[in-house]
Length: 439
Image (tube, rainbow, N blue to C red; front, top):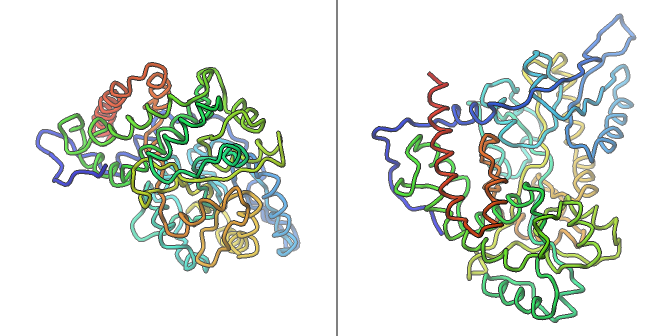
């Protein structure tokens, strides 16, 4: 499916600007509490200067701790406190942001990019070496005029994880078209093998996998949401773009795939899925590289591969779902901007950033980054190399719209049309609220 050309209708509607959209998307984000002890402390000559490094990705906290200690050894007199609090908002609300941030590039971070509270990093040496297509990805959610607000650090690419032993046992090819995928699923089902393991109890796994994969293979997601925002409150079956119109074929594909799920998918969680897949209880799993470590904990010798979900009958249409898993930034309110810049430069050194991505099952973001050699990742490397990728459609939906719950219901009832209608209705109300709060 392609987005139909045409000028968005604006008569009688309010235009939802990107700035209004991002600000509204953050409405209702829990602020929580945040310990801000250990902020920059400069004393007499010879004393220690403390800067804060904020990194919210829990599974790599220990990894970054080691990197920060290496930086301290290279920079005597500097101490780096590793702030791993999950919630980012209180730092800016209290005007006490960390000196350097390392965060997933998403709608939440977009709020701060739009507000201009992140410094321009275009003068950092590494900014000249970020792959152009990945730099463009970093700007999909938000930009600030004249600034490079974030430096991509790590790219996660997701597709279908498959069990190579099962495919070999049943002499099945890796599918490259929608028809081939259905044939593979039917042959597996006939052989009493679960084709796809699903974990619908955890709603994020539905939109990350089923929704994002089916939509991303048929819809130019970034363009769709840009046009949707441009339409403002004019969202429905007869507007230039809408969920009902542009996602109909994708959701029909999604409904078809649910026929090949494990029967207990509704009660299975993400952890259940990793355990079951690690035990060889299904042939395919719609998950990203973050699941591989848990699967390996069940069976470290399990032979796995990855391929992009094909949703058309043209093999050349295949794309991988990606996200900038981590990006570096320096707030304009950093207490020690010079030291912050030094830390960013240190982390962006090839031997540091390349090792991080290798060790954490991610793909490089720089022009000279080495290819992923792990066989579990290599299947998606060609798509990363050729920029045949897309940002997940679900990542553009603000938290105020419960996409995961809608999908959970759609999978259970088979009524994806009602879900798309509900998304259009919710987006229209969201646009109205956004327009009202901007005046």
